[in-house]
Image (tube, rainbow over all chains, first blue to last red; front, side, top):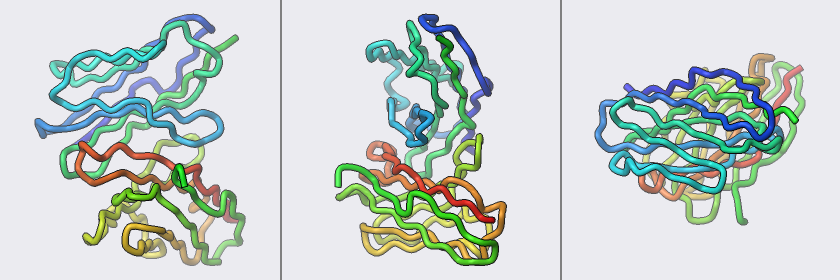
Length: 113
Length: 116
């Protein structure tokens, strides 16, 4: 069975601090994909990243970075030097090869000015 | 169009009435998904279409919910005899295909449904 756990329901940090959003997944497949989506207050989900199970290289995109660790079944997301515009709900998701995508319950991130 | 579009953006209805929600996927995307998101909650999978295959309806919460899709184009989600607990944002997403490699989903803005 597939499962995605985002243990942090809500996080508040002061602007310019770094913050890491945790994501732990469960799957029996060896081929799978992991995703992060951002849902700002406007409501529309925005795709951030997709990572396949064979590529454990960490990814950096500007202030965003992702740490994929198969050994711990984690795909954590770090925002460096956070900004107020980063305030949103962030969803981690998992998709096996031929199955529907499963979303975690999301982490609500508040960046305080 | 450039992205997934949904209509109406907002819908207020009375309990017991039927509603129809529409989704226009990105052109060329063969997979289409419907999700429900209650206020402050995560995404709840409803139904998934892939090309001409039988849809995966495993997430539909009751027989009052149904969805159709014509080919690889527009989809409609119908809720019959609406109940107050149906109030939520209904999100549609499309992707190039159903395999994980092509499965990055792009979401529409959602339809906010309020059942009075």
